Amino acid sequence: MTGEEATKHPAETRGTHQGKMETRLKEWGARLDELIARADQVGATAQADYRQGVDDVRVKFRAAQTRLSELRTAGDDKWETFKTGMEIAWKDLEVTFKKLKQ
Image 1 (cartoon, rainbow, N blue to C red):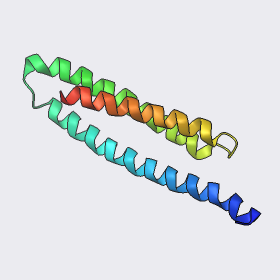
Image 2: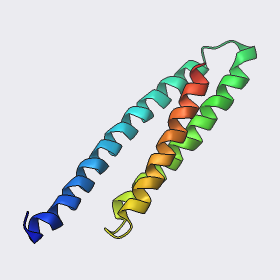
Image 3: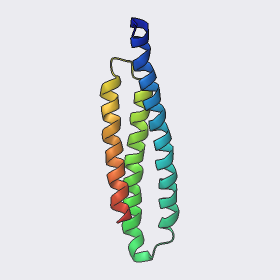
Image 4: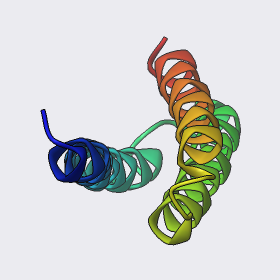
């Protein structure tokens, strides 16, 4: 691999990784919309708990959106730091979604 190829490879990996994250975030957004729609369908007793769960998911979703925005603007020297932060935000979002579905 030449020096130029080595320089391009991390950027391609970064771009591919960022694209996957953007796609996953859109999927999570669609799932959040479904949960919000369901909140109106649950009984009055369960509705308060369910809405609290939806609010928790919304907070985690916004945190993931913020991390992705930071990731987009991060320089190559900060990429790994922001990538790790994004992965943590992802796991938090996923756990919160799973809790709500239980």
